[in-house]
Every structure is written in structure tokens, then in C-alpha cells.
Image (cartoon, rainbow, N blue to C red; front, side, top):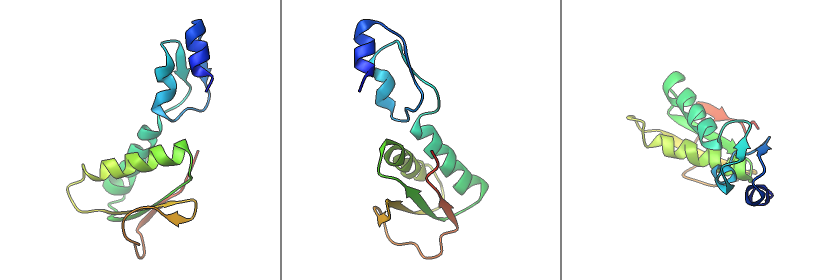
Length: 112
């Protein structure tokens, strides 16, 4: 990662694609141009659970920082919901969490 090199030199660095929270922890001159993956995951969960009233959700992710961080944020948000919600994580075509859900009401695609 180049962020520590820029931080050590005291040079500003703006990262165009940085969804992982550790990127900007390299130093006070390292910035991101976009949202954290957690924010995107929370927004997807908010939309699925509160706006669409879904209780059976399949979350499709890719096996990279974006997929791992947004998927984890979606699962974390599940704990803040008052009614039970079933969530299934599918990463790169393989089921990664919980039980298989039949007929999910919402399927969230991996959008980067």
C-alpha cells in the first residue's frame, strides 16, 4: 500500500477507491474520495429492512475489501433491527453465512 509512504513523506494523497477504513489511518494527509464500505452496507440494510420491509435477504458480494466490508456492515446492522431478519451472504458464488434462504424478498447485488 502506498498510503504509508505518502504519510511518512508528509505528502497529501487522495485515494479514488478506498472502501476499507484502514486506508486513511495511514496518516493525516491521506484522504478518500468516496464512502466507507460500512456506510454502503448500512445504507443497503436500511433500504432492504426499513424501506422495503424485507425479512429474507440474500446479500451477494465479491471476495475483496468492498465485498467483505459491505457484507459485514449489513450483518452488523441486522442486530439493530427489532423483527427477525434472515440474511445469507453469497461471496463469489459460495454461501458464506447462515442458512440457505428460499425465495429471498430482497437480493442486494455487488455494486462498486
